[in-house]
Length: 462
Image 1 (cartoon, rainbow, N blue to C red):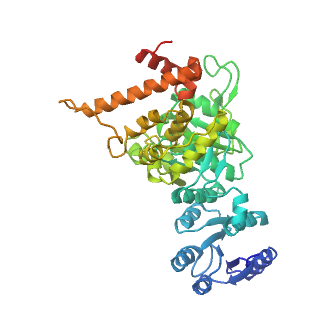
Image 2 (tube, one colour; image 1 turned 90 degrees about the vertical axis):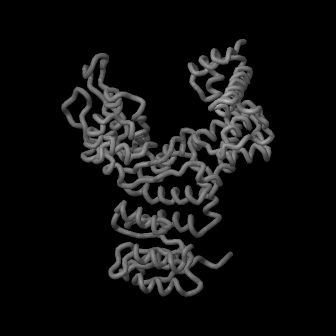
Image 3 (cartoon, rainbow, N blue to C red; image 1 turned 45 degrees about the horizontal axis):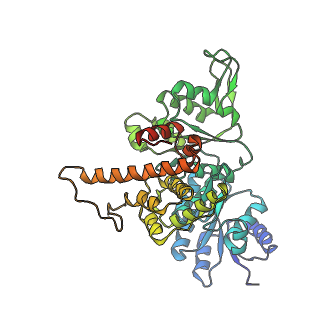
């Protein structure tokens, strides 16, 4: 057994210090206390430093945030959990920006504190809790959160803080970066985890249909409304709703959504009665919100209401250390799903994966692994990746014919190579499914109509 971890408790209330000492010493931690931020800084300057600091946010003179900043300056790697009786999302975010490891709102349950202490002080408990850096957190609906880069581990820590604070969250980032995954993680870590989570694609429906989808309607509200139907907000009462592609929501609907955000109430289509709900709203978009507001596509008041807390998910090309982890994760997942043996990646294919810019982010990587596993053709996989090298370089070993003396010759050559790879992938999928077009479309992750079009385009026949 190693030495017990040392925890420094910082609070200006003597009764709190006595209570925390009793609480922690029962769990065999070594406990030290400080009655002010200045006293805490003096202690942390001495060796050996504490393993973790429990720091109260509201203190006279040097407050918790000011103490946090200086603590991190003295000991950059020190773990600090903020404690506060005020559940202010702005403070939570600010603490995270200044390096707080986590945030706990008073009064808290002993089990909550125990979980955080195990997470940050006990490596074995971290493994048992599934909190390893490369561990995939199962969120249901075949979605997993994998934090294998410093940036995504930082986002994971922020999500843990934000989840416990009942405010709207705006998720920003390119398509395929995992915004829905983060939304489900927020829901899972919140007090609403056992309630309903629903996702609504705001770009998929026109304003009239979107309104009935969100708020429901009464019988006779419009032609074909034979019976009343509750909307997503009613179905999601006490739960969490994700409004995906909020930047594409019709402007006429944005005012109604703003009303729901402000008052947590609305009326069904065709009804004058008011429905009251308790729903946590998360929103996601891949558009440039500043430009959308400047052009009138997104209402400023709605943006500021949704943007109590925002998280920007970086594209995969900015977290390339995750690519090997994601390749292993997706390969294992799909091998189990399709009852196949996971395929190894040759050094050449692995390097191509690392070099590829992945404009479709995680979604593109997922579909690439799925196609490679099903078709099992490394040359086809290489052709798919290497023709879109981030630096525009020719694939290794590829010797193109001299470019024609006309603009766009290289583009035509690349397009021809891509078309050949696509045709070969379609032919293999059709052979794999004995020409069952619906199954082939599913394997290729395209729609049935798109597959029929491609079959005609390339003149493929049985």
